[in-house]
Image (cartoon, rainbow, N blue to C red; front, side):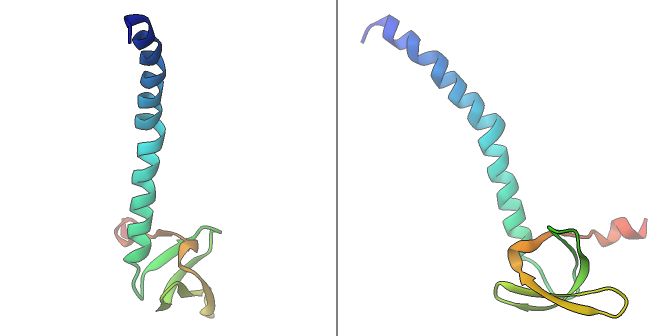
Length: 94
């Protein structure tokens, strides 16, 4: 392999490295954090679904989560992956 062929590979490899560190790696970290959050859900946690529904977890069965919403505590069953966020209780108190 001569030097000219090697120089032709430097730019594409550089772009791949930049693409990996700016796009792929941060997305993998975010996905891992969300998966960990969903695996650590427990009864009584206040959550927000990916559809924007606020509620409190009443029951957990494998991949089905039942949350209570509203003043009359209506129960909604949904998939575990539909939980978007756990509401930070310390932020609500401030």
